[in-house]
Length: 474
Ligand SMILES: Cc1cc2nc3c(=O)[nH]c(=O)nc-3n(C[C@H](O)[C@H](O)[C@H](O)COP(=O)(O)OP(=O)(O)OC[C@H]3O[C@@H](n4cnc5c(N)ncnc54)[C@H](O)[C@@H]3O)c2cc1C
Ligand code: SF4
Image (cartoon, rainbow, N blue to C red):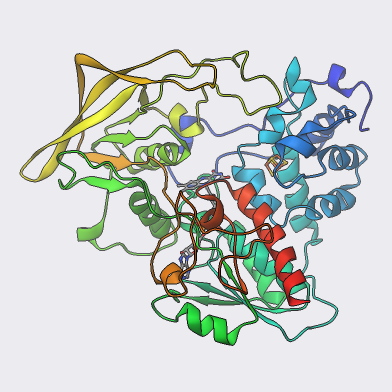
């Protein structure tokens, strides 16, 4: 245990951030690292409770949180890093972008602020990079087995690293021009700067992983070819089919899926030139973001940085309560109102509105009409019914509408069709308990198998799939 009385002596301290006015001037990350003296006190707050829910319930990869808190408190950072890497390959990604379910299940959070687990995770791994402790780990022996991985998001990268460290030859095929999946072209730079991904890719390359970018499996090469050539294939293709809003006026100019907008900005930040006729810009525009989740928040932060006149976010669900309800007790994820850093930067939020119609002039969108909704009380299963309120429509002006209503499933193109790979009722790739698809030797992992989720879950499944592939190859 770090320090018996730590949680009574020290309060939670969050890392400081640039003010909203300052940070919206560019697309850089804006959170600072706490000083080492302060981080030691934060680690000292961990009470190493008998049943650490943060580790066993909150964190999807079961990070050994109390153990590394103890090591940080005792100034044994290298051991802390080894403990961290024993359960997660890329803590610098989760230390930046994880919503930290661990902190909501921290025992301290029952009656006070939880331990700053996510920030301590980030500090441990960044210390590791700074000290030069993170180096390529080469397999002791090579097996001559060849594994193809389709997709280079966090699930594909994790599987690639784990499989390669078992001595197998790994080639990652990525249809984009750069490696990283949604880490690269979904999550904005102000949450995750892209040198963070490049630094890890260099480690994977030094460990022997081969990356082939600009190869769309199913178009440039066929899954059947991969089946003939490789001993095992892992599909880590994500869940990129967006949920659409098929209401009158959808054909108007100025209505885009969130990912079209976000990926353009990340490309521009990387120095790519987007042709003027294809550019989606929020500058001087009234922007409506449809969808109240994290992707919507990323659209808000990006639109504000581009110089939008006004940004509005609309959600169909009711406004959540400010505190946990009795049906949503600790250690479960709290169903409460969150305000993201992007929402803090200046955005008007609406709840309980259902989009009915897009309006336009000369082929361009000018606004959206919404129907007010009343939600019934939750029944004994927690289900609420949606009731449209008659004659209470709301019209909001817009020159740009961004659709951020989630994703349906993996693309059902040639990658899935060529070998007739089975999907489940939701359209995700169906796997058995060993991550095997309906095609012998083909595995699936990450969002392509679960549906759209989180980076930490993608990493978790990447590790488990790698273990299953290794067992299969043995
Ligand atoms: C805008 C946005 C913001 C997000 N922010 C967060 C966040 O802050 N925190 C968090 O935890 N999660 C966040 N998420 C979710 C998280 O990014 C995903 O859950 C995670 O990236 C899924 O990892 P993956 O490896 O399964 O798939 P992906 O990251 O989607 O990667 C799949 C890769 O496969 C490639 N591919 C697909 N088909 C083929 C093919 N046929 N041939 C070759 N390559 C192919 C794609 O180009 C892509 O690079 C966010 C998601 C979005 C959309
Ligand atoms: S990966 Fe996420 S849930 Fe796990 S310890 Fe880190 S912040 Fe917490």
